[in-house]
Image (cartoon, rainbow, N blue to C red; front, side):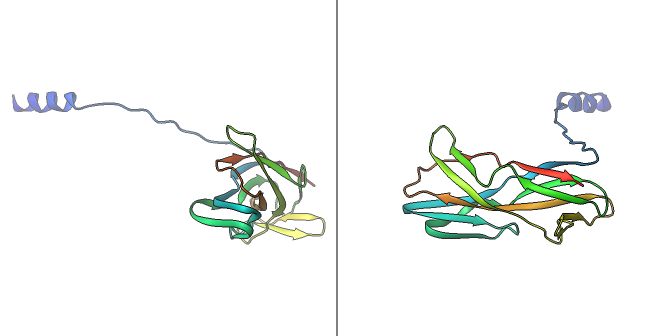
Length: 169
């Protein structure tokens, strides 16, 4: 009888749940965005200024902006798959991009885009482009840039698209 009661109690406390599993499968000679370029929290003033996030993640400011703690700060990161010692040309669709305030019309300009080549990027800069240094052909690279903050910039979240093209040689 005790065993029957124990089983009944377990069944009464049983439950089920669901989770979502996601994966991205990439093919040879492809690449994708891994992380977004994030400038963190910025306090504008009556003077224009700029915030730069370098490919190594360092954040600096000039002019009339103050860097405020909190908020994510990181370079964008892209990953790809090619072949060992293959040359990859990386280019931007434009020299600058517009970030627009969500639910608004105010804008800021993102320019001075820098494509990084760090030891973890497994890409080596050459006069012809970038060389894939990973024996597996898998590589990644960080991208930094400078955000131009206008005088009296309206507070809010700003976003825009940064378009990068890879040309495998």
